[in-house]
Length: 244
Image (cartoon, rainbow, N blue to C red; front, side, top):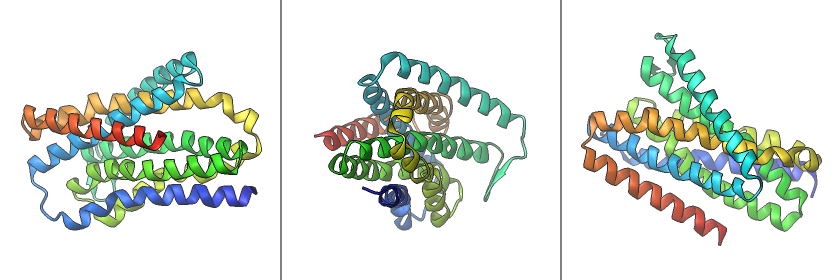
């Protein structure tokens, strides 16, 4: 495998993230209840994704993952406070709290993509068959991640095409990091568990500090609990299926 080929495989994983916005082409009405359920669905998807990252990282280094989780929690809490100091912040058509929430989730997914990019490169360093398998799994896994981003953006007024663009943008670190990780496997591999934990910690913070509380403002407690649980279990089952 050449570095050029590894790069284009990683580009495909990034492009797959944009597919998560496609369901919104068929959804035109966005009520307040739908906004609440969208937050709940995104919370379930992100909660399962964070659990999957921790599970994967524990196979590499338990202390590394735990260190990464604490760093991720600290970083996202600091980022949230920094954004709150800018009440007029805008992102596309979004302003204020909606813009801050959108930036946080896109930022978290982007940070997560750095780790996935390293994973692609390290996998190809172990052989073509392993690299193609890991790349395919990440590409398929990226689709619900794009859906989680779109669930936050579209109900708040962002057009579908822009939600898809932000989703792909969040995965651009994958091709950027895949090639260096492929060329310098031994240098990048020790950082994988910390990166997995970092992304998981940031996602967990986002779920419990932002998505679930806001979901409860617009939808009933039972509806939010049901939606979070179904999304979390479905995403976990999906991740286990990819590992089979």
